[in-house]
Amino acid sequence: MLKRMIHFLLLPCSQTTLLIEMQQSGQLSFIQKLRLKLHLAICKWCRAYQKKSAYLDKILLKNIHKENIEIINDFDIEQLKGKIREKIKNN
Amino acid sequence: MVDHLHIFDQWVEDYSEALMRRALYLLSDRQDAEDLVQDVFIAAFDSYPTFKGNSTPLTWLMHILKNKTADFYRKKYRNDNLISLDYFFDETGSWKDEAIIQEWSSEDQNLMDDPEFTTTMQHCLEDLPPKWKIPVKLYYLEEKKAPIVCQEMGISPTNLWKILQRSRLQLRACLENNWFHIQN
Ligand SMILES: [Zn+2]
Image 1 (cartoon, rainbow over the protein chains, first blue to last red):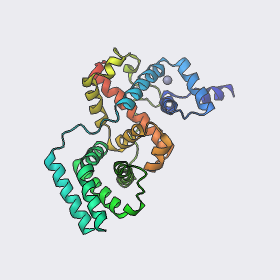
Image 2 (image 1 turned 135 degrees about the vertical axis):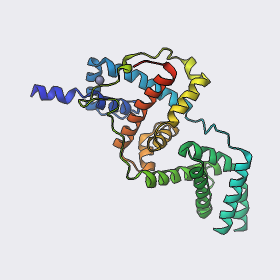
Image 3 (image 1 turned 30 degrees about the horizontal axis):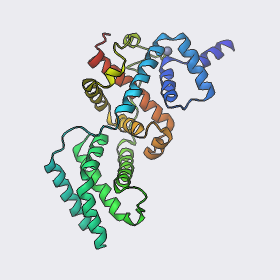
Image 4 (image 1 turned 60 degrees about the horizontal axis):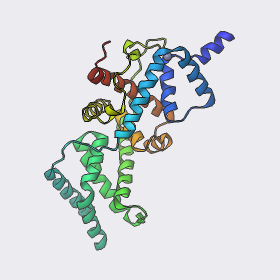
């Protein structure tokens, strides 16, 4: 019974990284929070990963609003406008 | 009707580029992005009577673009399976990748404002499979509102977490190889 309890509480690292995702989005249930906390208390690998993961999260949130930075030239845009106008007319 | 056409002519003039940039960002393919933008304008033209003017035309068009992206995603990736975690974890679910324990050298604000780092990060993001990339980008565009992304993309929360988990594992590895130069 105790063994089963421990097995239930101590997730493998693969599943812990999933809980880390949910934590970053504020979507963990009470039990999930507990399981994550217990795992992190004993696993230095996941602790290291959690730190990196939080950092990636911060960067992505900050930089995501950058639209495509590739150069789209005016000619391509003008052509696209032409195609759209054509389609609207024939619609 | 004539009015309607006139307004659209102006919208095509004013918003095509912004829509194209967003579409290209989300789909990473020029032809797909062009097709999507055309679909957006056609859909907008057809449902113009429902446009209340509560939002700006661009906001409205961007909203349609998001719906069209979700349609595109569902059609294209409906039958794809997620890539397994075998690359990162062994059969007991323990880390395979020793590099995980090594700290990143310069986790500070400077790095976030470093354009070279940002470029490396963008490349790593673009290297993700399209099946993951689109939800990841939408997740951050929606400021991490997971339920909204799931609803729009028609994917379950579990799938979204798995996509984010796998993407982040891969982004981490990509940055360690290309920026932090951590040896395995
Ligand atoms: Zn662990």
